[in-house]
Structure formats: C-alpha cells, structure tokens
Image (tube, rainbow, N blue to C red):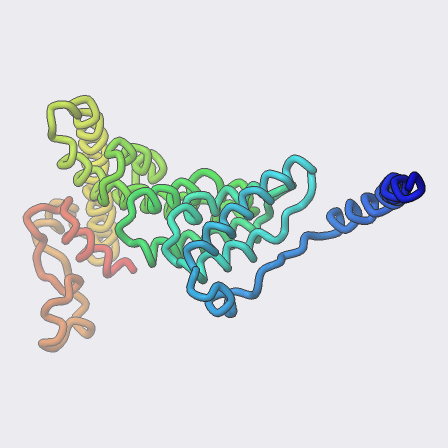
Length: 307
C-alpha cells in the first residue's frame, strides 16, 4: 500500500525534474524564434471572409487587439515589427471603413518598432487616402490625413521639393476637414502651411462664415485678420503681375512711344494668331484693356501672350 501511495509522488518528482531539465533549452529556442521573425497566424486577406464564417466584426476586433498588443510588445522588447501591414490589410479587407485603423495607421507605420522608413510613410499615406475615399465625409479622418502629410511624413522624405508638396497637400486636407466640420481654428493652421498662397483664401472664407457665432468671436476675428492680409497680398500680387505684363508687351510692341500712350492706345494683337471668328474669345487677342488692370482677367489676358 505504501508503495502505491508513493507512485504519484515519484511521478510528480519526475515531471518536475523533466521540466527543469528541458525548460531552459526550450525557452532559448523560443526566444531565438521570436528574435528572427514574427509568425502571422491568420489566413491571407482574400480568404478571411470564408475563414471567419460570417463573424467579420469579431475577427476585426481580434485582429485590431492583436495588432496593438504586438506593437507594444515589440517596442518593449526592442524588436522590429514588420508584420503590421499584414494585420492592416486583413482588417481593411473585412471592414474597409474601420475608423480606428485609419486614426492610428500613420503612427503604427511611421513610428513602428524600431524605426519607420520612407517606404512605411508612403504606405501609410496610401492607407489614409484609401480611408478618405471610403469615408469622404469624416472630418477627423481628413484632419488626421492632413496632419500626417504636413507634420509627420516630411521628416522621412529625402527630397525637399517632395516634402514641400506633401505639406501643401496636407494643408489642403486640413482645410477640407474644417469644411466638413472640424475645429474652424485649424483653418489658420492650413493657412500657415500654405504661406501667402491664395490657395488658403477659400478655406479661410468658409471658416470665417462658420465662426460667426458670438461664442467664437475670438477665432472669427483671428480668421478675419488673416483673410484680410491674404486678400490684400493677392490683390497686390495681381496688380504687380498685370503691371509687369503690360510693361513687357509695351517694350516688345511699341517701345518708341511712352508707356502712358501705349496704355491709352491698347494692346497690339498678333494678327495671324487672332484671325478668324474662333479667336474672338481669346483674351490674348483683346484690343483694349479691361477697366481693372489688377483683376485676374487682365492677368490672364496679358500673361497668355507671355507664356
């Protein structure tokens, strides 16, 4: 009887010894496998709908949770996280309009463990643009897209011209977010990014109209001041452009008369170019100046010949 009672204790002791002998080696192997690469345990996106058996929403929640956990674990373990696009593709395959994914995709890719690359940033932009296509009326998404292009992405791009182009695109996206209902004060951010460009004027005009409520008086005033500055600058630029165009045509067409006489006589159209009825609406073929030489129509009429 005593021998039978001792059998469980012997088995338990043997199990403990076996675990103690094998665990360190298995732990080392497991650690090495994790260091070499991650195992993505889900089917490819094309097969996910069949694999989830109709439980797409539950699968999206599982994938999203897994992605966030893996992102944090890789940061804590100081390991590269290269599987993020697989999770992102899987989530968007099951739910293309998943808002949480679009809100964080820029951060997940640009600041992935251990270091994001130019390729990651370009991929993040493609996902965000996909989001604006499937959620065109989401002001938060447009704002996230614009801020990513304006502030985060340029640091990863080697070409200065491309960086500036991305910032401009980001500024327009921020302005569009304001149009859709985002914080109207962000229109000033878009204007700052666009600089003195007249592209900022439409966004500021709409934001100025949105902030007429008394509780937004301070923002309304700030937008109005910036709008007035840009409009005045645009008028001066248009006047200067018109004056330069007139001077150029005067020196080319009638340099032997005074400028005042040339402006009084009007432009000299190119007869071969302006012959025929089809050229009637061509601004370059106009035979007199418009009343306001600083207007956009004059700039177009005068600049067309210069081009």
